[in-house]
Image (cartoon, rainbow, N blue to C red; front, side, top):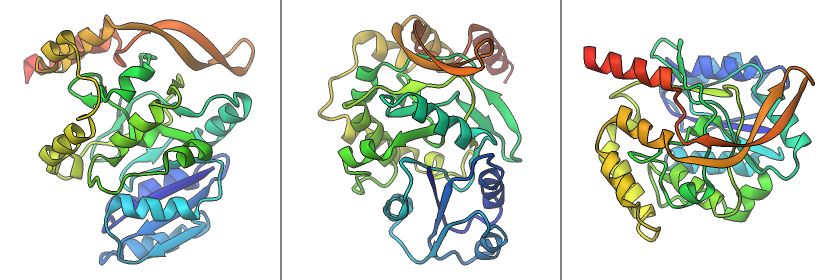
Length: 295
């Protein structure tokens, strides 16, 4: 398994990312592509050279260009990238490797949606094992307002799938991962795993995803231009806020695959069941609604 991190001037955050890779119970190939940082990032990388297999620090053309450079240096049969402010869980590489070995027909997996705050504390895990309809991903529904976002740091896939779609489309500056998921889904379904595998750090107003939200939306619209439009129900609930959007997703039930751990058999097992499209349980949704009303 190969993990790629692209970073630029992230000295205040990247150490927790590096620690999360160093703490893996099964060691991956770790590749760090730095865009010639001018802060103290390089000194921090040197402290973790025992877990960094490839370290490149040179000017590049942005995050996705750096990730592509890292992928070309990857030797693993399982691939992912981890942003320089996000983390892997300590068991991630072990679990992901075992699942791909046990289920050779699975090409692409994701864990439960998980969030860190600015201090690096785990503050939420969306606990519902949702369905991820292949047609919905391929049609661009996971763009936020319809089905929510697909969590990039929690995505893991086989090298053969990456090669089939020819990697990232570098014409996108912000939505290349969104475009990648739609192309993956045209080939194979996304299979969820019933545990957290990574966590996304929320830094409103500081991250590219929030700072350049309008540009991201424009790129998503460009990506979806030739995809089938959403139906009336999706369009109606898209502008109603997080709570109503999730209620809509709860009523969209599909039968699909998932991977869960059987404590009885002490093994990862595949299930096929009818599940909703919401990643939040009803109780989490009630709490979310209550907090939003108070604020």
